[in-house]
Length: 364
Image 1 (tube, rainbow, N blue to C red):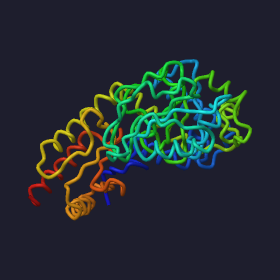
Image 2 (image 1 turned 180 degrees about the vertical axis):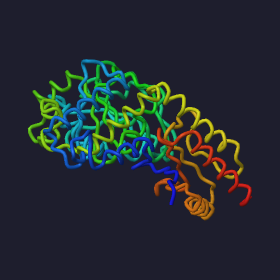
Image 3 (image 1 turned 45 degrees about the horizontal axis):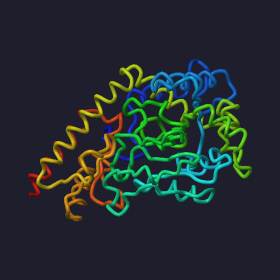
Image 4 (image 1 turned 30 degrees about the horizontal axis):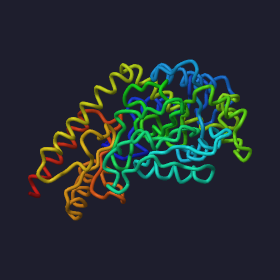
């Protein structure tokens, strides 16, 4: 069968040109006579892949020199523990904002290692907005302040970052990284699972300010597993052990692809156009309704409902039959969800909107 449109929240669709290049290089990468999957991570060929990918990511995100780029394993969820273990130092508390399932899991994991101050939460409203923050509830002695930039399941996004003063701002950027420009200097640490806009699952990118690397080196909790130590990962060029080599290779191809398209300013233009088209349809539909407050809507994850569970299910089944897959909403929200990451282009969103318009007419 032909390629389908994959609206999964992750693992997500990858750029076709990247997949085609990987296919061409599958059995013989760069005249080495081997696949990257078979290649020693200590080989010169793989070292070139790894270092070029990091260099391209630095270009894409305009990462300042006083930040290091780490490739780690275990996905973003492992960082829920790694962050407090590395960054608490002599402190015993951290601030968290609860904006969805992954933010909630992050703060629950952190509670194993420190006092967690939940500054604000939108849980009571099914996470349909980013909560207003009261600065009087911030802990000025917190080791760090944690947010989840984009909430994959509930479709919300931080449009304005909290003013946390001198406290390092830490974010899980898994489902919005590379979708638009980011001022890295506003963060102490950014981490992101790869399986949305970067590449295959299994890789996590960590962008960390070097003073926090030094903190990890000097004051990481003694219980911190070696594989979760930021300083050790940095000192070993992300190769303390065998890294997820093929995921790094694909990530590098994606970074190169995005640079060739014009970088993150271009991706923002494309993603805004896609989101505007889909939200515009939903806001004018008599059947479908977007679930998120307008000012907090994600560019990447768009949940919506009909208000009728049977109709939602019918829509998902017919969409799948039409080659539009993984539109079923998360079980905690229900309805439908279209994840329109970078690799879904404007024509793909037009195809989705055309299908929804047709479905609405036929089921009015």
